[in-house]
Image 1 (cartoon, rainbow, N blue to C red):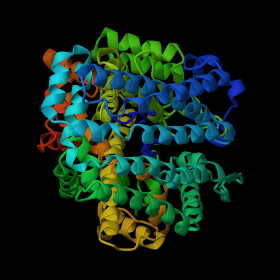
Image 2: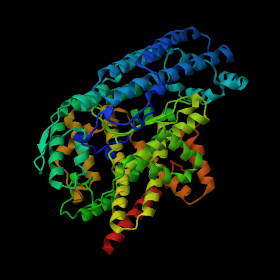
Image 3: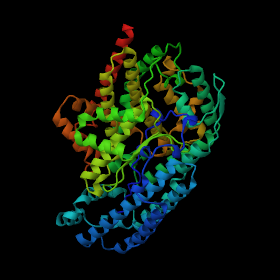
Image 4: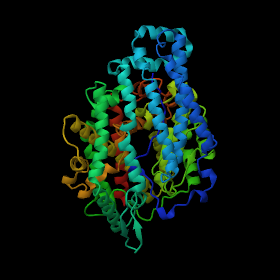
Length: 626
């Protein structure tokens, strides 16, 4: 099999709850205490050690091709190759993580970006060196490979991958074709790389003058801060400047996204899938009906979302709810702010239902510099968790700015970290990397526990309203907004697959049609300015084809599982911890079924809508009392 690299199993929290930091409030990295910064020397002591490890990996990888022609000869020969493959994959992941983490700490520093590019070329070459492996294994009868596994216990961790390889046989290519597919990775990631560099480091930022006379540059960080401002005039000013600026580059961003969609279509057709959607879901054995049912279920329940918009409008006291109002605080004079240390204490307390081992590991993550906490100039915006491997702890990137949403983000990313930690601890390396489809379950589960713990503490009606709306905003952002994105992704891929053009204009028009439907613009639920048609260009996840729907499916699964664990059901807790520890030892649909959530049914989704309506009932009860 080709090198399987766990290259930063990253789960970036989408812009629904991105940082709200003002650039003017950012400290330099030198001003921040070490305990709040990553200790990347846990990976390599220095850049020089990284270079030595890279050179050593290249030398080791040179020996892969000697296995050509031997893989189906005996269990011993197959084992030698697979063990070396895993060893190289693990070291390659470490190399990439070190370069990538350092790059994310200052995206302006091209040194580490160059190191990433160097590795990408190396990995492409590794792919060509191992292109023979899958066709060679598939040339044998599956029963022969199964016999090898039964005869040697050390091959047992590879059974899942080998079984899946035969399941995918009809989509595998010949050795020369696999080499070409591996080489194509040198160019197919260009759109994503250009997007990341331009959007984060080089895109000009407009300037505006706020109502207090302050002149500011509307960067992404500033936009995220001021869209949550209580000053409506400033919000609208920043919104207009920000999206008008993106509108200027509609053609450029259109070409970037078109390039990524064409890449997805190319790979799906080259491997003889019926669609790019099937190509994305089939390797993890996920039926396309799961994706399409999510979209159908959300569209069927848009009245619940429109109810949320009506509550938002009522609480803001505005005649017309605008898109620029959606992130504004709905309760005045409630300052839900927490220092990072306070947040850590809140998260630790909230996670107690998951047991002492879980909580003690979270404490270790906080105390042992697994987390890079604060925004600094040039730092990658957003938040993510990276899994690493059994011998190295996970890493979390935050941009903490004292808001309650940042506390929730911390709990969210710690969920990813704990799933990585427990899977690495429990599973052998080939089975430790869990499927992306289940990746957001653990993170959202932690958010549920945090909310449940926080709301129990609060008695004041205004504070309860603020927290209930913050939680309701998560439903908006994770269930409805991500499904809106998923529907958009499906439609742009279907357009290219049917031969239709996909310029920036076409993309914007398609996006706006979906936006109007979800936000009930024509029914008066939310007013949308024309420049919001460019919001698609702001979403980095569109460069990771068919990724965002998993936020929604995972969210519904986590709600269903959390409801059972919160009830005190010990068996439900044990099943959940087993799920966190399962890694990739089974297909994702089966992993969730074992945990207690059947994603081929509507039950998790229906439970989530019931939960959402229960939160809205509580909000309206307080509002009616007031």
